[in-house]
Length: 88
Image 1 (cartoon, rainbow, N blue to C red):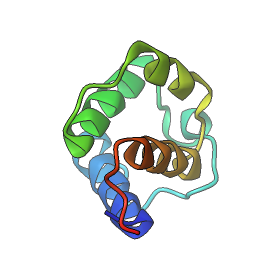
Image 2: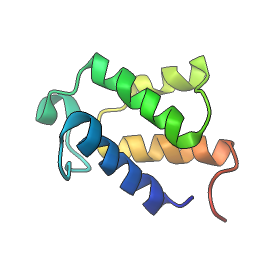
Image 3: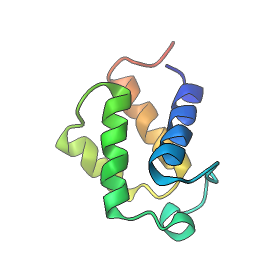
Image 4: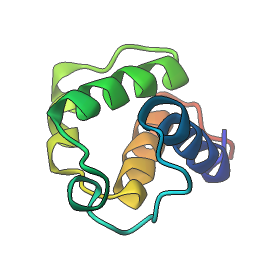
């Protein structure tokens, strides 16, 4: 998987699950799209599906400060690297 794959999947998740088409990568999701804690839980579930593994509690805690699409992509990339899923 590449960063580009992650970006595409995150955009697909936002369209499919939250009906947000082409979200701006650097805006605060809560302010721009009304993203709330329920949405965050749904997003974490979608991330688990994408990665093919459950997130550990400490990994979920790291997601608490995420506010933008770019931060989501960074977060998934970090998780994918830890799991050996990133292309070299």
